[in-house]
Structures are given as structure tokens and as C-alpha cells.
Length: 291
Image 1 (cartoon, rainbow, N blue to C red):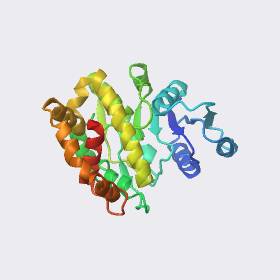
Image 2: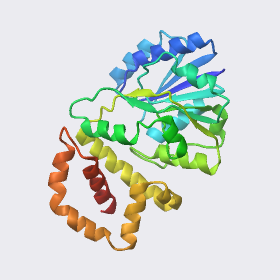
Image 3: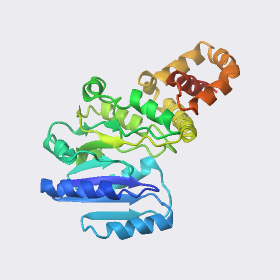
Image 4: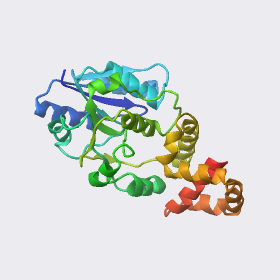
């Protein structure tokens, strides 16, 4: 088989996305499959998905009995996929251009891993923090991403040779939200695996509500702190980790926490507002990392 299009799913109904991917793969005239693994969504939603996807013979829809998390499900997709090449996306991916798969396929021999990037869908009210963060920190053009190719790895939109997963897996010790992509990119760099960044974005909804994104950010920081003990080289890759550990070494962490305390309510209120400050968000994250 030429191509496996792999989507992890949780509480999502990606009907339009899958239809678009099937149409593009058919037009490309490749032997393909769409492999979807549902990470134990609600039974009613899984049943709706199963009924819909049964109409497409090239779709394999697998429902897990228990939720296994972001890293394990990606490894499960890699193990189940049959294609020589893999297009790996997130379940909430939106496709907004008709040559999305073709742009990857035409470059398939250019590098072991190809990353397409993202662009933002219109802002959703009460999701401003996630949207502004993505706009400034994640929606980066391919030229800028190529300057730091491994640091710019993202799990939500990449294309690779299937043989990649014979040598590198996602770290299943990572729980909750965040940094499975960081560690995977670190592994790619250690193995000197070639990366090409393309201008081939998915459309990203950035639909986490402000309060939910703050919770996810805390989970990501907890993962980051844990990973830094096993992979100390990450300190040089991630700015907030580097700053936090440096402040601790020079006994400045307690001073920062002391200075932050009287501002905490004002900062939190701002981060939940329609005009959140990313500077305040960085202070919020640094304080959580230090505490």
C-alpha cells in the first residue's frame, strides 16, 4: 500500500475532513487507506462515527475500549498503518485546499519527515488565549520553521516514511496534554533524520476555551518538568524551561514567586478576557513551573 492517512480521534466527528482526504487521495490515484483510531469516545458518538465511516471501503475505524492518551494512540496508529508513507493528522484537522495531499506526495522523496504547518481559522469568542498564542507562536511560515527544523516539529500535520516508526516512537510515559511532539522532534534530531518544512498548512480552529487552555498549559508544564530530568538537553531547546531552571540555580525562583503573588488575580483575569496578554501568559506559566 502506498499511503496511510492516520487520524487519532477523541470526541470528534471529522466527516468533512475525511471526505476531503478521500477525494484528494482518489484523485491522486494512489493505493491508500484512511486509518482512524477512536480513543474511547462516548459510545453514542463512536456509534455515529462507525455508521458514517462504514460507507467508505478505504476507511478503517477502530474503537478502543479504554482511553490510552496522545502518545500511545499515535504509536498504535503507526503499528496498525500499512502504507509505505504516512500522513499524520489530528482528529480536529480542517482541510481548506484541494492539493493538500498532492503537495506532500510530490515531495515524498525530499526528506524522511515533511511538516506542513498550520494557519488559523477565524477567532472564536472565549477562545482568545489559544488563538493569540497559536497566531504568535505556532502559525509560522516554512522558511522560519526550517531555521530550527526539529524544534518546529508538530504532530498535527506531518508526512513521513513508514519506516521512520521502526526506529522512533512517541514516548508513552508522557501523560495528559503536551510535549509528545517536543520529545519526538528531539529524537529526530538525535538520529539526524532529515526534515523538510513546507507551506502546506491545515486550518486550525484554536477552539480551546481560555480556562481550558490554562489547564492544558499546566499539564504541558508538568510533562516538561518531568521530561527535563530524563532529557536534560531539553533545557537548551525550550526557553521557559531554560529560564526557570536558571532562576532556580541562582535562587531567584522564590523571589519571582513572591513578586508574582500580588499580581496573580489581575493576571488570571486578563488571561480569561477577550484581550489576553501573552506576556502575562508567560509569567503565569513561569510561576507555575517554579512552584
